[in-house]
Image 1 (spheres, one colour):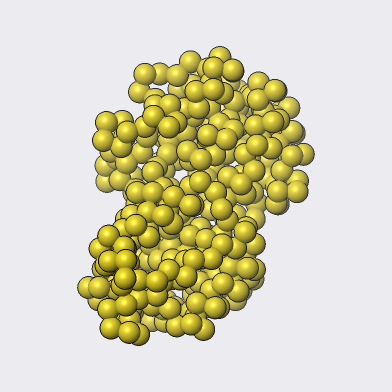
Image 2 (cartoon, one colour):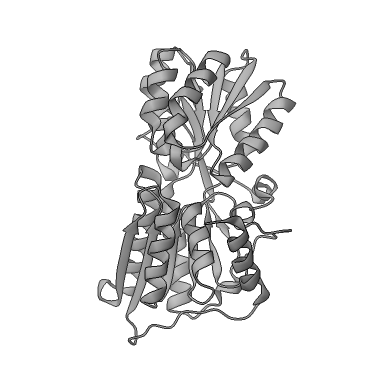
Length: 342
């Protein structure tokens, strides 16, 4: 999908202002929800499952039908999936990941759209002066963790490092936003940062090899292409003894040493609660601000840390052992400072 087409579509959406956009089931209290997930990987799968579980919990299993489709990492397929939802006049669309959200925004200005696992809505939808509420027929949840705290985590673990490689997919606008923000924070801490952008999985190996050769530490943001190809990064960085700090848990489990991450299942649950408000309570989606994860956890990959000899502070939790009740550190309203354009 071209940016021009997306911008025109969004202009039409925003022109609706605060005009009410609510869902109405075609058959009484029975609803059909289209789910477009960009690609299959642990984080996005968890967000979709949390969304479905919450809706079934609140509405009942017999009251909702999920039309769940996966684009297998292809943004053009996202558009095809969304068009099928529009043709079927679904009651609500869940757009899981940025490319799905962009396709949904271009595909309909009538059906309510909830995004999830979208890092930065202002960037994803090319919105100017974004204030936290998209308006029109779009809202949702963000998976953005405090980026300045991720930079601080890198400094905490690797205070003697000098050069940080920023490895990300240039085709993902939200990844660019994250590495730009982290770069600024790291440079304030005294690090020298270099971008290592790859266009798709085909050049990931060669770019990662260059980054590993030239960096003391690598930072990888929440990035869907990386999340689907962590083995490639690990097979290069681990033998080279170059640690990787990541933007989320799933990537860290595959190739990282540590992350400040959210619980994607819980993010999906939050998105499901928003859907129930729209479907059951008739809440106006145009008035619903983007919601953020309330808790973040410092996590580490035990096996990789042991192999690299990385000493982890006591307030980190091994991936797979995190407890939401006892180990998550709740953020304050100051989190808004890290999600400025979100």
